[in-house]
Image (cartoon, rainbow, N blue to C red; front, side, top):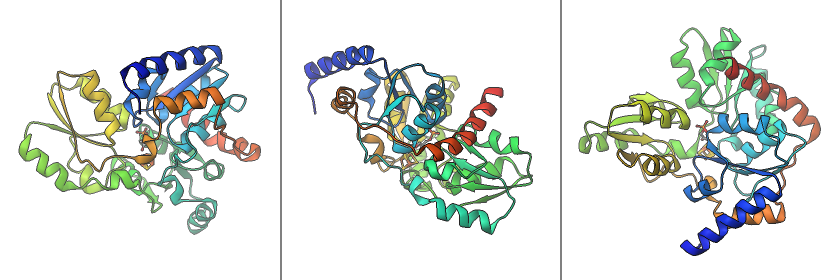
Length: 310
Ligand code: 13P
Ligand code: SF4
């Protein structure tokens, strides 16, 4: 950990090195807030993928979990993509592997597969299209199919189904353990103390939690909604990083984290020291098997094209 003087030095060093090495630093909004001081872009999974797809930087330092860095590498195969900690996995992404995917598809033949980006490159290499939480409904709608397979997040799948009643969504049995820890009682109890608060919920939450939301959306959509809303107080049902940034950026409003348990340890591994180490040593480089990458890029690009047309 560092004090304020060290922090200023660290930020300066990172910025200088970033320029020298023509590196771009991308950070997910669940990261420790201090990394925003050096990040070129802070956003949700979709926003980060879009930037990774079009950057001309030589190096991308990805402050997020492994599947996000892997997605950046697939989209920018000629760039060096670095992730400071190789332990930053995603428990949801690990709930499905290629064998489980093949079995899921075999049980439901000839049905298009929609895969949340929270998945490994290998899994992406055998699906029809990817989605993120900000475009899942648009992606499924774009298929114009009566039935789709949705993986790995059953709660995001349920939310899509609710919004597209004409489509049969068959969801895989995966979920995000961080969002799963949020329970309806958290919201009910907070509403007793803050009856006028607006409740904003990420669609990775359980259905019983989503039902209590005034607004449901991805991290960026939640942030945008708070800017457009006239409410003064918000109960935020997603990961803590979103609340930290909202409170910093809009101090005139009150943002209440729904539960202390809404904390993803894998997303909190990077501090400024780790960013500096990654840049100085160009570690750890993300490598994706070329054949897998060649196939995995197709569903990701299809997703990006849909959103760009929207
Ligand atoms: P979004 O960035 O799409 O909101 O996803 C949330 C998440 O859990 C990322 O790991
Ligand atoms: Fe994975 Fe959930 Fe953490 Fe996102 S918040 S990285 S889905 S475990």
